Image (cartoon, rainbow over all chains, first blue to last red; front, top):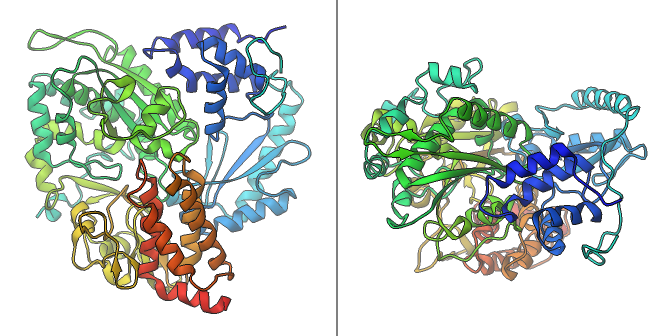
Length: 188
Length: 446
């Protein structure tokens, strides 16, 4: 069955399109919306966005891969974005990152085997006066200490376990990671 | 001299600390939208003149005079766009995020006045993608302004003409380069955030190929008070050719890091020791980055200089940045580089800091964020990051200092946008000011 946006998302896209003089300009907001709806942006979602905005899939691919917040791979986990840029570095940002890596048994760039956490070494996140810091979702965790991090991780894991018992959002099917085979009539 | 006049004056942070300052009712109860009422009783050209008189300068980094920027919009332009740059990403900078969260209506009113002045009818706010919560707050404020009829409705002005103004919030998606104004415009058009060649400048051909003014959040939030209290008043708060106050974000090794609105004539020494409570753990200051990591650092002997734009580019107490000892860096036509006030992000480091490691971290950042369009930047930032990192880790080789100086010198001035300089300037700046630290690393490696 071909992938479709939900009725609500379709309505949002209609509204978005009234705010720009052409369809292409709505690409970033529509990609945000698609990622919210399907969890990530594999080929079938990419093609759906391209068709919706009448853009070449290659253009959409180029845009998705340019921006770090768009994910081609499956999400549904707590993404810990830990800043290690200068302001955080000077106040122990690397200690915080290493503490998290040790506690979760993974390195930055990796996910825990249960899928609960993904850790990213992040660039400056504009909270320098409250260094060291990290973001998870829309929440800023400021003035971190290893003790604070422990509490945050426990809390996030608990909430993730509760959520995991419900259905995860997203039906994106994964698929290949190359530009090949992205024609609108081809299934990845 | 406006130092005394500006003491305690709050313009863009005037509503900080007030409960529910992000709501329209609170904003209005504190005099919100009065400036817009006054503005529309004036001719658009008179507003541009008032802003010129105020000596307001762009708060995003370059410090370009705002009124002058507005006056570059061609008189016969059919469509004019105002774009607010809220893509705050320069390491060490954390002011716009707070301004957006605490006083989004001040931004919207400032945008309405600016749009009236330049002839814009639809403005965009480009907000950094990672600022999810802030985007919700700003969108909430926009929705409130629409519901109150301040936006999206034909309003009859005192002169009988009609003014309708729309605002759209547009979220970025994680790319430092989109803070560069032409990259931002490409991103807003649904493209990769690649900077454009200038000219044409955005004022002539910007968003959707139309005349466009791009202003920083803090810049626009100064506009309502300039209109209410006058350009002369704003100008009197500053020093030299810079009017008003300045938001400074202080981070790193200080006792009281924070976001402060301060007189623009304040010195760095006063900032660090009087405002921020000095250096913790009984240590002394080694130096600081004056305006985001793309600006060459100041050492401990250069801190009597005020935080003002022109002082940082020209004060004789600041040493010239060199390519190598005795060879000053040439910005073109023999112009020397000292540093710049940049984004107001001040990063302080104490005497125990490994400045080579600090510099290497900055270089890794720019290597990561280079968009890849221009060879000198794409390749050069990678070289700087790798060579500086190996030196920091104790694997430096003879000639590395000269290599880094030469690579940096080869990037600067040879790229489409300023990201090249953003890496090259601090590289040469750190080498100039803290050469002994780099040499010590080299000796250790040998």
